[in-house]
Length: 195
Image 1 (tube, helix red, strand yellow):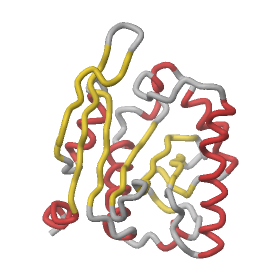
Image 2 (cartoon, helix red, strand yellow):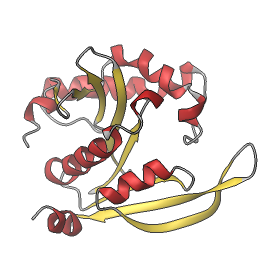
Image 3 (cartoon, rainbow, N blue to C red):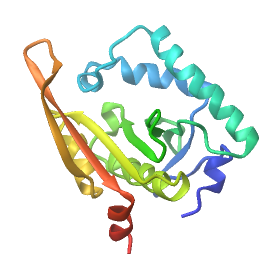
């Protein structure tokens, strides 16, 4: 699949009924709403939080994305928004460079609850992994998640990621702790999956 139009900031087909596009300032309100949903943020160590924190995080990403589109290059942290044909927000995903480790990237995806169970996360993970290896020249793509987030780790496994580690009692919860799971895929593993 060619990602040239996506790189230029255009929306492209994500699947038969959804589109995907690089993040824009107009997406923030939908992102805030999703991140402030208790069912979503139970698996996010940085949420819930005040919207100003999210603005501080996403603002530079949006600015860098706009500049990258003008320069016809990929943003430093390619971050995307998924929408349906009526422009309803269906989630976000990203493939971000690991600081100081050239060629290492991390994939991530967050969806509003009404988009759960529809294959959106699986497709997002697949597309971010493909962009990492084919567009960004990754040699390693990784992800992590809460051990209790079965949907997230099953998504990674469906896409060929291997569990590479587990950190016991990493996340402090309201009641107890949860482990952090580490997943990864090398360029060689990606190539063998796509032969």
